Image 1 (cartoon, rainbow, N blue to C red):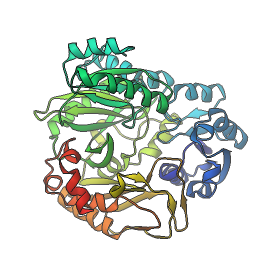
Image 2: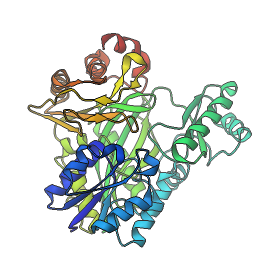
Image 3: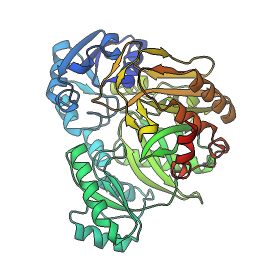
Length: 452
């Protein structure tokens, strides 16, 4: 087992990894930008190294700076969290050259699954159903027009690299394809430094359901059930549930088997998430694989009684998985709400600033992952998520009620947040009934804003 791990991230995920390492008796090194010198993760770790200016490009994405910090402090491994360097195969190779363990899947698996177009081809070869689309990337507008005509409108133009809902545009007809193609390329280049895109048939209001997988270096691969992620705004997840109120156990079992088969086919190791789109009839299609821990992993931990971060660390140290597939049991229901520093009334504009008053909710079944504290200055340079509230209960109605109670207790002053907006979602009859899909925000957006 490792003696010391460097955490190459910030915010709540850095705090979560530091806590997991501490539970395992492992010392931690934080890295921070100049804007994050007073951040909670920088204060919690046993050591902290400032690696550059506020800009992510000059700090958290600076591979040389992160590796230098690890070598200086004697860290034996690097945990990347999610985002930043977490799905960067070049960084994985650099770590290997430096004799440092990167707590991630192999670089070859990251390359095959991290590139969305290549991942589609890999899934097809593994016998996993995929959304009809282009055979690979489309380089020109003429190629896109030809492929869209073959696939059939409407189509989604999607970035081949990256994730997080960026670099995605929908075209309903040939007239709107040019703008969708060019805008997706531009956003992909700005966000990921890679303007390659591919096309998929647009599915009207499906369910977005993902399967959590874990694999070790001894050939064992398991899945830990599903998460319903269909509450989204601008392709960004807002609320996640485990399990899905839509998918039955037979459907989840088939998706789980496909997710495990896909992971095996690429020699996967560590934590990963296989994401599917599911239509109203229960037919499902592979969308992408995230080769890292997910923001919403706590809901899976809640219903399976596991700690996925600790398991990542054990696997990276060469230990076998703690469980076999038949050992995994599902109990109760969990919901996660992402709390963002933004103003829903001002078109969800980010709201950085100083936390002047703060009360974190608690009580039975409530977990809050956050790096906030009283007096903390939320910088304007990074993602706007400031907390995750996770509610767990024996069944879904009780989990919803606990989440409502937690959100009404959650007090954050000095900035704007989406807490009231999340409460409006939780109070919506369609959400309460579990009859929602990806079109939920589109149908209810105006009324949600009125209620918040």
